[in-house]
Length: 116
Image 1 (cartoon, rainbow, N blue to C red):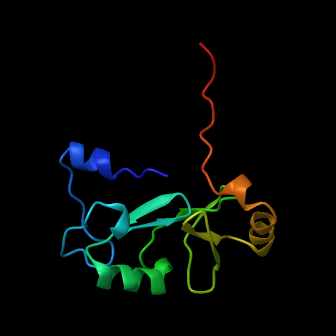
Image 2 (image 1 turned 90 degrees about the horizontal axis):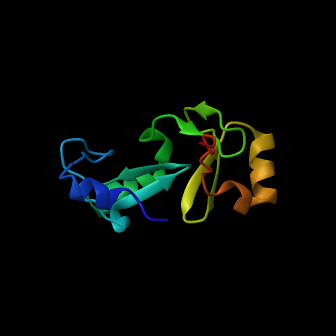
């Protein structure tokens, strides 16, 4: 998956590190974490390590990949890794559905808006 970094760089948009908002994030794949369908950029390896240990501390609401419900994950939220990203689930049933067919849910689907 290609992230938004190239567009942020092209538009000269800088963003703060999600772990340490006092410093700028590095806009490259090595300093990015993908959680559900969101991308989070970090300032360095220390910030990346903190994010990996407790990602729910640094995310906002995420979209459950199965139910598409927005929710705030916490330390007790069900979580797995798939397709190079962390996924949180709002319920046990959703985690089980995902585990059965992760490819079905790993990539966000943009609904078609209609024909002209």
